[in-house]
Image 1 (cartoon, rainbow over the protein chains, first blue to last red):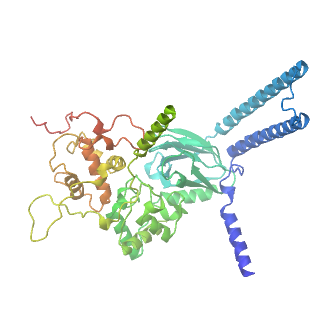
Image 2 (image 1 turned 135 degrees about the vertical axis):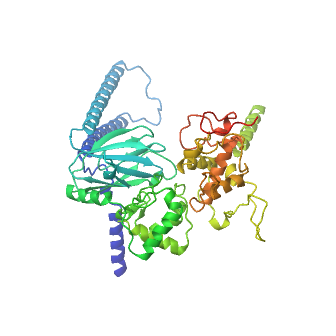
Image 3 (image 1 turned 30 degrees about the horizontal axis):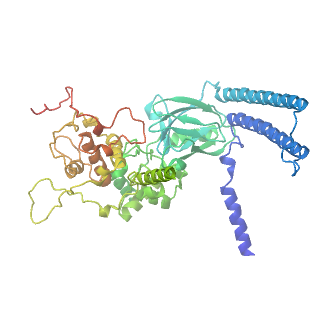
Length: 339
Length: 185
């Protein structure tokens, strides 16, 4: 009995973990995704009707002209009347097909226009840069000290248009959050822009949708849509430089961070680490996940990631860091203090 | 019948030839650091006391892999070697694509230069970058001077290429007025 209940709760947890609601184009949370969903269902029902008609026609033809086993070639004489009727039927079918495809084409173009069109004077602007294999997220501001830089987690205010400027550092990536809008390729050296607006608060998952190398499948991101006030609180927190660590272990961790390979690639604002090859770690403890939505942001996952990232994501740009055990503990304690 | 035998023979030969097509492995997970060469590389014959300093290894495994060399090319830019050496032509630092080597052109010499630093500006990268990355950069530096076979040219990166790899180009001569030493007569 107990085992059954355990199994049931386990299955329930599995079903919740697999809940497609946060990564599904048929659960739109934004007007753009709504337009795309409408086009999807329109096309689906047209194709469903075509499928049913085709199966019915084939079944009818098969039932009517049953071939008798003794005469494998029943057509022996010319049937002009039948040929004429068949010609009309084929012509009509081609005509209906062309008209249907044309309607779908026109609706696709209209949906594309509705997804693209932006009318807002005060959007939130976000610069998203694709890297192998993570997303750099910047909230640009003419004042450099008002610019927020983070990675893989995109906070946006609900009900506000968001303009996304895209670019890529290395190869072509594609930004795709199915609940929000369609895909947008990030091309190296080519800036482009698109917009979205999220109406329902929540956390939505996204994924790179253009094969970009070894760890393409582990290049996820999340969009966190929150109220305007919560967004401002988050932004003010992100603008701050990293807090000085308080515990002795975290202070030692900062020392380790600044004297090993970490600072060759990462930035922690407020310290000497200022390289932009890897994600900005100034507020890494405020994120839910690490390694582009691959691992939960826990002490164990952080330690495993720091010491041997090539085991978790083979080919990732981060090099292994064979630190002594107490150095590793200290670095993890420091990273966890960066709220 | 003869025709069929000929076809079969061609098929067998083609299969045998195909089997020899192999690309070198990409070493994604580097060997643990304990197995790597020590930081201490001997650059002169003088030895203080009885402590023997290990001599540089005569070969660099990353020179035999196009992936290793192209990783070196990427790191050469990422770690801002280009800031002083440009893309081989030199500037604040000496050019790397000519035949003049102040501290030696062997893989071990270049590795030691990166790890230990050199007077007049070359910083030490010891404990800043993993040793295997210094070996990859050393492999790329040698490819710039045309010291590697063309088969491991670093243009087989994941990015688009706008020019052939350095090791596939004719010998380059640094030009300009950026403090480049005169080419020896």
